[in-house]
Amino acid sequence: MELVTHRKLKGERLMPWAKGTVVTGAKGFVFLAGNTATADDYDPFKKAGGAVGDAAAQWRNVLTNIKSDLEELGTSLDHLIRLTFFVKGPFPNGGVLSSPNFRQDVMDEFFAQHCPKHCSYNNPPPSELIGVAALAHPDLVVEIVAVAALPD
Image (cartoon, rainbow, N blue to C red; front, side, top):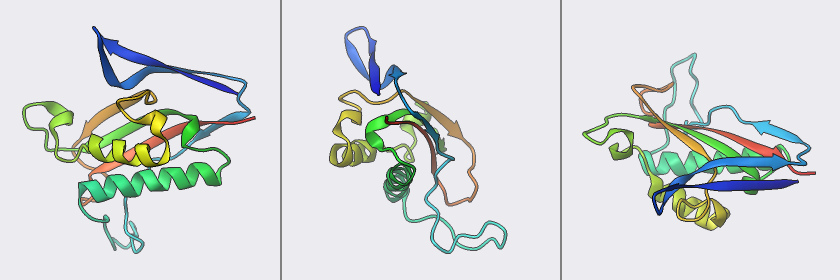
């Protein structure tokens, strides 16, 4: 299997997301459901539990869940093809990137430790960043959807 991620440049500046990833020879693909940072006692039907910590803690929790889910399903962070981020507002003046709930620093810290090729300053997978008014629980600030290839 081969994954080739093409960098996204604006002029001479490298963007913190890729243009696209070309996958050849994959056995298949893993499409993860949206991951959130809900506490162990979270039960949406009983309206129990909530989110784990502040925005940084939630990002770490979600990324750790994605890593674990990918490994359980036979792949890894190395084989990420795409990420979609849903970030809860507020969005003062600069849109989603200026929200205190968007944490590129935490993502880079996580990927530097677990999969350096996906740091924003290296060659991250393509992604979307979507601002939302609310998620499944009022305390949640981020939800991430991931797609990865299954190696041969």
